Length: 479
Image 1 (cartoon, rainbow, N blue to C red):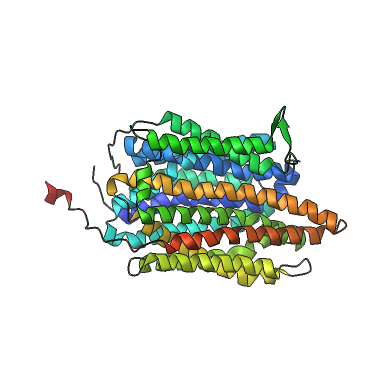
Image 2: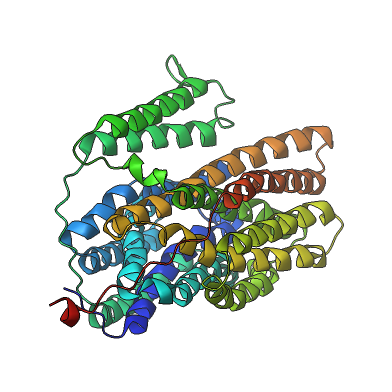
């Protein structure tokens, strides 16, 4: 089917679900102190609540992008949205950290079913020459949702309790199901893919072990996990399994989960690496920021969310204009500008934060972060996906989104372990001065994504302006 009626209406319907997915990557961060108290648990368990969602979101996405090619993106999207909505209800009803972690894992699986279909639909609904504004809207939703999470989460936590950061997804999810069922065409690529079971098992096991080792290293004092197994061995096993995954993809002659030939495209390779650094930053920046403004500056969750509101608003305003501009100029310069602005904003916050400061010290840096996120997503997505052959669009969408989410998983794990380590060291060196220890730990942790963004700048500099592709002939003309 080549139905293309009302592409903007279809995109709006898809963006409802996409907004919810990305909102849930950051909305939990604002509720961390409340969840630690409400569930009577520790910081490491709540970091797992964030990380397990990112992990089950990222790992299956290479597989779920193939499901869209085989069974139709609309059907897979609707199934994912239903799973996500029901899992959100389960999250809100959870009474223990362990139950909440399990529910978040299922929620991540629903998100993994949905995300590749949204980007694949953009390449189907909009011809290359008109794709910039659509990518601008998609990027605007991504930037707005990622940063709006703390604001909405703060209001819900203060007024109704942390459970409502999940309950709010239920009516939105139901509305998204109705809109998608009515507005999104039932496009059928009808590509009969085989499923790479060894690749799925290797990637799932490798990433799971790597993230478990990184995130729980501090919890186990970088020593024994169970029996003769220690943290370093767990991390090494994860790395070896991921290396085995890459080797298997190289020698799998049938249909690999990760077709390495797509990386022969320079723009796709550079855009995917850039996406990893952005995903890392967008999750790594919020935990230290929330700890600082709530536990040091003593702001309520709502007040902490309001601190980030101008950043969210600025990002949402800028993104559509940047999307249109990415069709008229070389997108790589917009990507580089956005990354530099984001890194500068985080560096400025780290430089100005003090235990005796007020929330105003974060304001200039957060505005810079808003400019950066609003400037990155649309051109990064445009230059990456516009360079891919149409027959590889579904697979490329899965790889691209997986890369960003894998970056998010690593950012959450690395940020969590570094923050906990620096808090422990700070409490010892400051003689138990909690405000000083938390401030120093937050400042030092915020510099980690700045360092990672330097790699993003190098990757973005390797991009080239995409060659224009002719729009596909209308179905009637082809007939």
